[in-house]
Length: 280
Image (tube, rainbow, N blue to C red; front, top):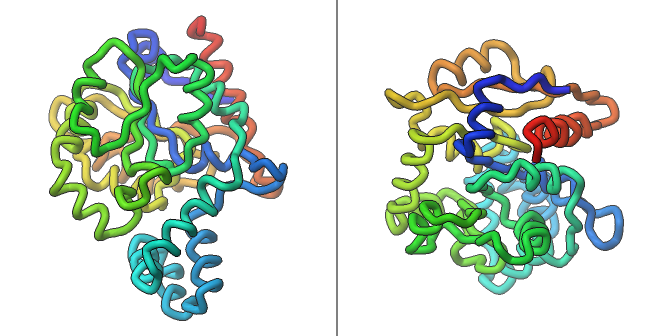
């Protein structure tokens, strides 16, 4: 189980923590068929490219883990309606059910939850659990700062939602456009970094959406507190840990993980125990 840092538990009890939940959280969910799980970036792009006969164009970018460029290449060869259908097929139509980890995260009772996930698994879950008292907003909402400063809990989808595919940040072009047209949102993110402790759950250092956030925001800003990144044991080497600590003020928290059976249940259990220890 995870031994949680005292500073983090103190910040949680003082409601000074912002949760950032990535695709690893969604991977715990199953679709209505009882077997489908949300795909990784790599698998999603690879299968979509094979279906459209352009895998040779995409493969070099997949091998280089340049998923953002791979996505743009894939999208340029598709009609808008086909692209929209592809996204719905992956993120909406399977009707993913929430998993135990979603409830564990909800129990932490954090006022602000950020997520780059396009799916609506956590959104729908907290909507029902809270009886509609938790707001869900996307990065392009002009009143985003008001919701963050308000007295209600809020889930912010930092890259948009499958509901509005034209406003999803899902490639290099999207990201560049968003930084210009919605600069106020990135100002809000930077303010949160300086005033709150971030806890990253279900994220991968190599995931492009996470790398964009880590690289764009200056975690080493003068006056900022340290932030925490949960990772499976032995998946991030010591050299990388040192780099993350020195350049991003990011501390790694590890949980036990058996790669042979891909069992991440220790993460869910640890978050549940954290919530219980905080009296939540």
